[in-house]
Image 1 (cartoon, rainbow, N blue to C red):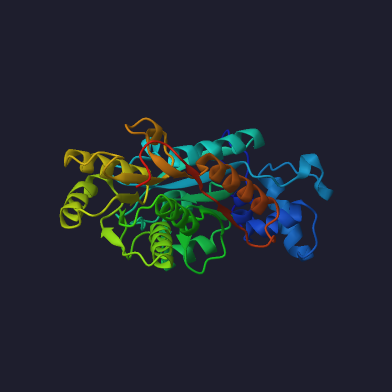
Image 2: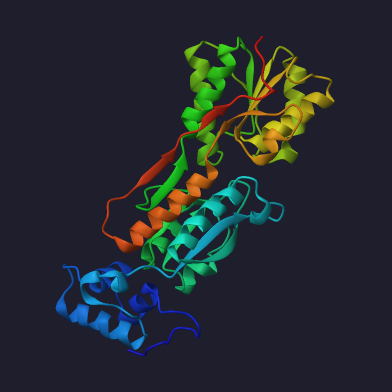
Length: 347
């Protein structure tokens, strides 16, 4: 075994010890917390590696010896025109992550991951391969089978945040998109709207958007109403042509449900450019409650998602997974709430 010392000015991490001793971080955590389930030879190998790397531990897992993580990595989706630093949804999520990590003394490393228009990764993230993080938070991506398999092989625990991976065993924090979209559509129906369109979805869209489309359709079906679709990718620049064509073909439409606030605001502006008054002629409701939703005119009625809360939950889940690798899988669901503003009126 050839020891690779940790970089200067960086404490040894569980990942370092796992790599040095040839075991998983879960095994390292069990050994350093003096838990059963590890053979004596493996236990001694982990302890020797920890000592060689300068990791300070105390048997019996007292305060000084808890195998707490030093560094978490955050992988967040990125497009050329959608930078994480300015992303209206994920910036609050990251702020929530940072709050918990700062209080827990955990460092954060960030990496952008290029995705396509359906949020599917186009590359293998370097941070995932480096082994420098004691845990990974993956934000806003739809992970394919090949990437899931790679993530399942790394020693660090993984938590998905508004991210999806079919059949994975990762902990996750998601929004109750179906129930939120159902509630938004039901609210419009209760205000006597009978011709309601959905903007910004596609049948094969990102899972959260498919769920919102399903919630919209479910509410309409229960009332025997006809759906109207302004189908496009979830990007404000794609909205105006679709909304313009839909309203020209179906002037009877009295309300729009935008699959997120950026789309809803773009739809509202497109309608206004056609001479449709919002909300007198056309009501508009969004989803997420980003900062801009309260600043536009008229202020946007929307379904609020606790974005900072999602980030805090995700960080706590990763801390729990790092300290208790054998814990049961957790899927935390954040429930949206209706925020009534000025863009919706009764018919």
